[in-house]
Image 1 (cartoon, rainbow, N blue to C red):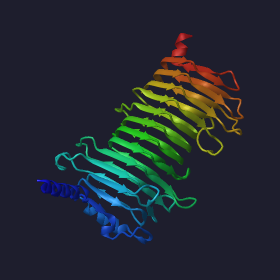
Image 2: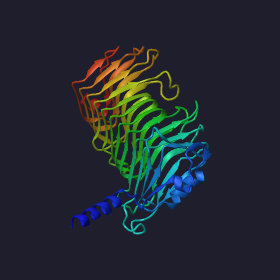
Image 3: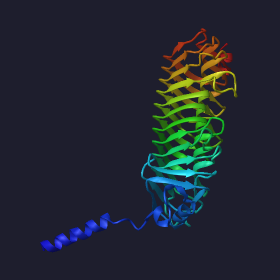
Image 4: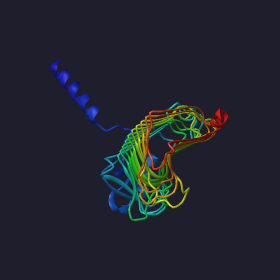
Length: 390
């Protein structure tokens, strides 16, 4: 009996330690990962052979790639050995495109999902394209999820950069964590770009610099939470621009945004948008385009409502800046709470405003804020509600 038991244990241990039938390695398809051989064909063969629901292992090393890679209609995990040791380097415009077009019936009720872990995406060209694009085109899906963790997005050379680092379209229950982004302000559009009906997204512990947009949320996206992030030297930091029909619940917490024009820009941000416990710096001399005035947080749009800005430090730091600075600029909002914020002017300008309200701003509360300005314009109320009170 004891012998039979030990045999059972040996068989069980062997079965658990054996590689999964759904797990394949790019080296089995000819990838060298030596930093010299063009591995494009080998990588595409591996992606084509990957079973639905499978795992593609990409070991430590450097893969040289010369065109875009495509994974279509497969739920998959792409797993590197870590962003510090697994690197994919494109010598031409390229990137990795994950495409899901199947309907619920066609995919036999399999939940659509893409997960990418532990990979550095590197380009050697000035407009490298989109490094990682997850595109769920079918509307007949249940919670198509998109997860990116421990990845780097960067260029090799002074002008080399991705046009976009991560683009998620119609992705639900998404998570982008522990990722680093380095771009070029003139040609990088966005580090993280969410479009379509992307729902329930968490962006956490990410660092990014040098782009037009740090995080850009558009379309009818609903439910985006940004936390513990550090995005600097961008023209715009965290931007919400929602079309008719979206209920975004856009939250930015415990984060640092240092940007040239609007570090935080909520445009048509309906339904409980919250900016809290953030350090927001307006940096100006590097950005010649755009409005001459600089703002820390800009809130606008006739559909914007129920917005809270709390416990934030908002500063302008450029000593050479001499135009207009506004800490918080709110236009056409319904339900605005500004509480316990600090607005400080550490620049050379004497034309500053702590808070400016314009057009239709209704049902607002301003409490416990501290202003360190050159002027005495802590609050300028030019809204419709103010004119009615007068």
